[in-house]
Length: 264
Image: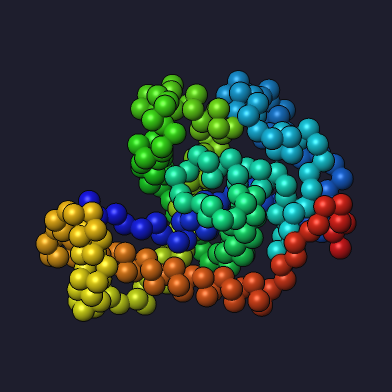
C-alpha cells in the first residue's frame, strides 16, 4: 500500500503546546494552579488523575524555569515537559539521532515563531466537528492504543489520564493545532502548482522502485494520481516552511537559556 509521508509542518510545528507563558524575567513563583482551582472551583477527579502523571513543573510543585526566549515570549520548562509527553501520545516521527528534549525545545521555538506571525491575522474558525474528527482519527491510529481500550469512551479517557491529559486539554491542543495548519496551508499551498510531468516522474522514479523492492505490484498511476499530487504538495510546503522559519529565526531574537542563568 502506498504510504503518504508525514507533513513536515505537522511534525515540527502543528502539535502545539497550549499556554506558552510570556514574561520578562525568570519566574520566582509557582506555576498557576489549574483553571478550575483558579476560579475557586474544586479540581475535578479527571484533572487530578491526569495531574498524577504530569512532571513537577507542570503540577506547580516546583518553581518553573525559562528554557528559551523567542522575541520576548518565553518557553518554559513545563512547556517542554508537556511537549515531551504529547510527543509520546501523538504518532509522529522522532529523529532518533537527537535527544527527545532537544527536539521538543526546537518544536516549541518554531511554534512560538509561527504563533507570533499568526497573531497578525484574523483567527481561523475551527468547528468542534473538525476537532472531534481529528480526535477520532487519533484514537484509531495511535500505536499505544493497541494495548489499551481506546475504542470505548471510558477506555480513551483512562488512556489520556495515564498520559497526563484530560479530554478538555487534548481538545484545546487539537483545536489550536488545526488553526495553525489552516494558517500554513493558506500561506503556502495556494501558490503551488503540481504538473502532470512531476506526478509521472514521482510515480516512475520513486514509487515504482519502492514497490519493486517489496516485490509488489504498483497500482495504476491514474488510481493514485491525486495522492501523489498531495505528497508533492506537502514536500514543497515543507521546503517553503523550513525557509520561512529560518528567516524568522535569523530576523528575530531567539535565546536559549542555560541552567541557573537569569533572564535579562
